[in-house]
Length: 209
Image (cartoon, rainbow, N blue to C red; front, side, top):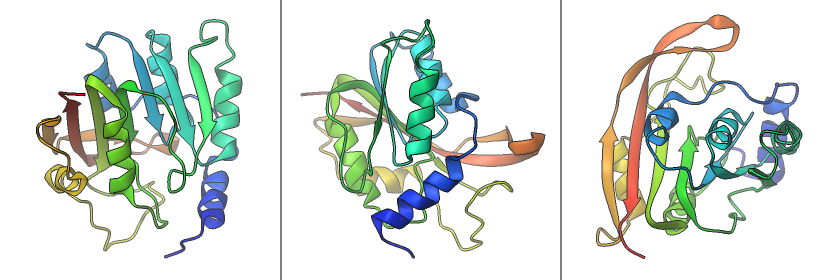
């Protein structure tokens, strides 16, 4: 496994270079966020920005972060549209090193996987700590490998939602698990390819300050 920050940044720069900003919102984020009153959100690993743009267009104030300059710069340009002005703050962070400031009503970590060394549990604990009382942390992980995924390792192991929750070691007095399940859905990838995939879904609420 490659472990340097420079290698991680270079990999994700190449991954997002040439990709158009925007795209579809991740369906489980839409499912969870649609009934919520808009507030302040954090999009961890924003990529091409589809989730950020979807939230902002529904009245959320969104901080979007990614390790790739290509992702952040293009989202900033896209967010300059008149209907989005002032709703999006795009920041570059290597989450192995830095975490964005602020407190949030919703933190979204959609498919927050990497081939590089990262203390993911530490990052997600920081996300839980950044929630306002009543705020939600939504972690949606791959539970299976799609044919178009960058990760085609046949030995890849995807922790269950219960295992992810346990790894965070959150105080149950201050945080509660609202949802932990593994739904299946028909997904569409590049070029219109489709496949049935499993999502590992963990939703945590901060119940106390």
